[in-house]
Length: 606
Image (tube, rainbow, N blue to C red; front, side, top):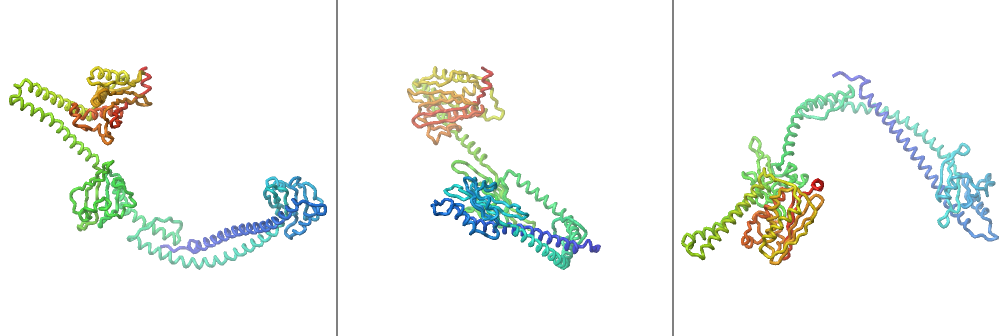
C-alpha cells in the first residue's frame, strides 16, 4: 500500500486533537471553577454578614419594643450606641429605619448623620418592611461594587422596622481576576506539555493500529465485523477500507442466513397452531405465541424448562417416551366452568448421522371438535332413546292385538288408542327434528314482515285462552301502544306456542300465567311467567339444550319431546335476539326473549 505522508499521518492529527481536547477541557474546567468559586466566595461573604446582621436585628428589636423611663436614653441614642459597636472594615454603612413611618432612626456613617429623622427613599427598604422578607442586590457606588441588604425587624409576627446595610464586595471580584490570570498561565503551560506528550503518545498508538490492519486482513478469511466510515487515507482510513472489504464479503453469506432465518421465524410466528422446539435434553428453546397462549404461560419464563413438565406429562411420560411416541397425545386442561382440550403431535429433529438433536411439538386446539363429537353422540343417544320407547310400546300392543286381543271389545280400543298416541308422539319428534335441521342449515332464510307486536302477542294468547282445558287464568301486562318489529310471524308464533305450552303444562290448578311486553331503546322484551314448581338453579342454563328435561317422567307423560325450547332458542337467535329463563323453586318460572327494535322504523309505520 502507498505510504502515508506526514500531513496525512495520524501522528499530526492525534497531536492536534489531543491539544484541542486539553484546551477545551481546561477552558470548561476554568469557567466552571471560576463561576463556582465566585459563587462560593460571594455566598460565604453574604452569609457571614447576614449572621452578624441577625444579632444586630435582635439588639435593635429589643430597643424598639422596650418601654422607656425618663432616665433611659432615647430610642435614637440607644440605636446610635448599638451601631457604634457593630462597625466593621467591610461594612460601609448600617441604617435603622422605623417600620411605620419609614424614617431613619440611626446610621453608622458619620457623614450621613443628617439623614436621621428623614423618610428613607430606598425602595428595597420599603419592600422588605411591607413584604417582611430580606431584600438584597449589587450596586455601583463611587465606581465600586457594593452589596446592599435590607432585613426586616420582626416583633409579634409584624415588621416594626428594618436594618439597611451596605457592604464592600469589590475585593472579591479583584480576587477572581487574579485567579483568572493564574488559570490562563497554567493553561498555557499545560498545553505546551500536552503537545510534547501527544507526540510521544501518537508514536505508541500508531504502531498497534498498523498491527490491527494486518489482523483485519487475516479476518477476511473467516471472521466478520461491522462496516466503518472512511474519513481519510491515514492509517485509520486504510484500516477502515480493509474492514469494509471484509464486510462486503460477509454480507452475502450473512444475508442468505438471515433470509432463511426470517422465513422460518415468519412461518412459525404466523402459524395458528402452537409450535414448541426443544434441545436434545428436552428443554424448550423455542415457542411461538399461539403455543404460549394455549398453555397460558409467558414465553420468557418457559424457555429452558422441560417439555414434559410444561405439558403436564411428567407423571406418565419421559422425554425419551415422547421421542418414541408415534401417535398424538390428547391434553385435557378443562375446568368445571370451561372445557379446553389440546392434541399434541411430536416430531424428532435428527441430524444426517441419525443423532437426535431435539423434538418439535405441534399443539392443536380440539376443544370445539370434542364438544361437537360429544353433542353428536348425545344427540344420537337421545334420538335413539326417544324413538325406541314408543316403538317398543307399539310393538307390544300390536303383538297383543295380533294374538287375539283385537276380539276383546274393551281392551282392543285402548290398545289402538295407545298405539295412535305413540305414533303421534313419534311424528311430533320427527317434525321437531326436521325443524331443527332446517334451522341448522346454512341457506336457512326468514320471511320477515313488519308486525304490531302487542296485537300479534294478544292474538296468540287469545287462541290459548279459548282452547285451554285446565283451570289456569291469564294475566296480561301488555301495552296498547303500537310497537312494530320486523319478524318471521310463523317462527315467532312457534316460539310463543312452545313457551306458553310449557307454562300451561307446569302450571298448577288455579294458577296464573302472566304475559308482559317491555319496550327498551333498541329491543323489546317479551316474557311469560307461570306459578309452577320452578326449575333448580343448576338446571336453569340447560333447559334450552336439545332433549334436556328437568322432570323426564312428567315431560313424557305430558307428551313433550324435549326440543321445544331448543327450537325456540334457535328461532330467536336467527332473529338477532336472546332467550333466557329465571326461576325460583316452588314459586314458578319466567321465560323471556328479546327482539331487535328500531324506533325510526316504527315512526315510519305510525
